Length: 135
Image 1 (cartoon, rainbow, N blue to C red):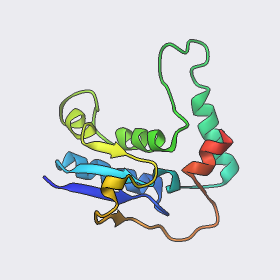
Image 2: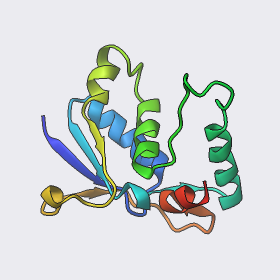
Image 3: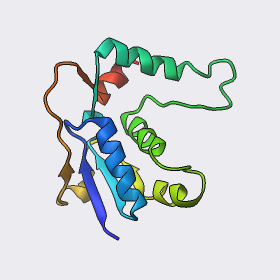
Image 4: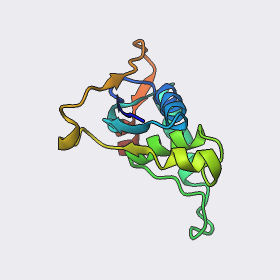
């Protein structure tokens, strides 16, 4: 199969994640670049509150999950994971191994052709980098 390079800059995180999950299920290797520039639509305050709440879910016994990272590439990868069938077995497990997420563009991928799923401009949005700084 082929290797796809997805540029997350100015792309809606959910749409990008669903596209990446679908391509991984088809057998393509996926590299999501510039994860910190992906956009979550909605009021900034609501999005920040929602993600803070998710991080606080397991404060009683932190040795067991669910664990929710504040790093942009890990948030993106977890979003893609949620759009796969059971990532622990079968097709989902095979597809999950084919997904890689990066902050910025690594040197080895600079010359590759990238796919960008740009969104329409909206007023209510926040990037993953801003979200990381607020959490």
